[in-house]
Amino acid sequence: SAIVVGSINMDLVTRASRFPQPGETLIGRNFSTVTGGKGANQAVAAARLGIETHLVGRVGADEFGQVLLAGLRGAGVNIDAVEIDKQTHSGVAAIVTNDTGENNIIVVPGANHRVDTSEIDRLASLLPQARVLLLQLEIPLDCVTTALDVACNQGVRVILDPAPVPLNFPRELYRKIDIITPNEVEASQLTGICVECPDSAAKAADRLLQWGVGTAIVKLGHQGAYCATTDVREASPSSESVAAPRSNRFFVPAFSVAAVDTVAAGDAFNGALAAAIARDVSWREALTQAAAAGAIATTQPGAQTALCDRLTLESFLRE
Ligand code: ADP
Image (cartoon, rainbow, N blue to C red; front, side):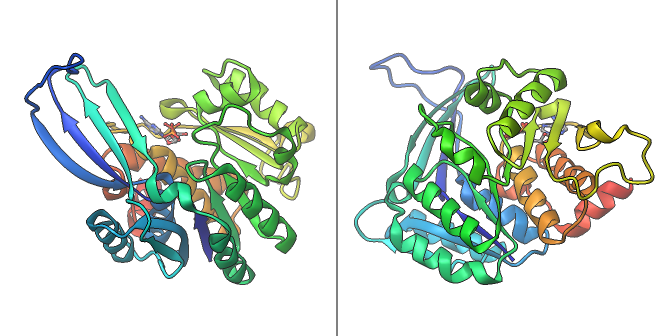
């Protein structure tokens, strides 16, 4: 099974022709509520692909919390370890989108910022059955680091999506991370290397390996993803003529799709990566499945609504 410890949010999305000036009231065009939060999105992505998935996190004792939980349950995510916190509201993201496609976003973490040691206890009880733990950085950093430690001790593989990157990401954490999956912006923030293409992604991935992570996967949006791994189990498989020292580094081009909304592409990618790792497939195959799930997510509007099931993924990969 897969476990996700992470954020659960309700996105409040308003569309308007432009952003309002301070003090101005503007009539918007339309409004929708969309379930989100990187933790919840990644849990739904893994569950839709047929992996038993547990989410550990918090919502508030409010209507959004009920809607969020119902959505997760409906997607097949086990939410027994999600706490309803009576002290605060559910996490929300107030998003305004203008006609040129720019976003203004204010996130109020609410219950997500009250995730604490009781969640770590729940995680510990789930870990013995788990193959993989998914983490992101939308809950308090000390909870993420404790979760990392607990998973490390139990030998469960950890995928950390370093989003959003905090001001001072502690260097000593890298050696505890099996797999880190920054996008271009996050890879740049973490390494100080300006990442914008496969070449610069390779440099950033190498630096992350030097700092101690097992596998660095840099997500490059419509360009694809770059993977560097110290895991040499499958170094130079017989079907390839790649020189041995380079064989644990490779680039996965993006699938060519008509993208309409790239929200949650990264979460789809991470959920599918976890599902592939839980099924113990090769790195290349795992990255291909993750890239396909990411591409499919861009062809649909919304976050959790855009995440594909196993049949859709398999038929996409056959095409
Ligand atoms: P994030 O959402 O974290 O910023 P990316 O935008 O890099 O992540 O997307 C994650 C992955 O999804 C990419 O590495 C790529 O494989 C796939 N992907 C993203 N955008 C597109 C796109 N426009 N076309 C095809 N695949 C895409």
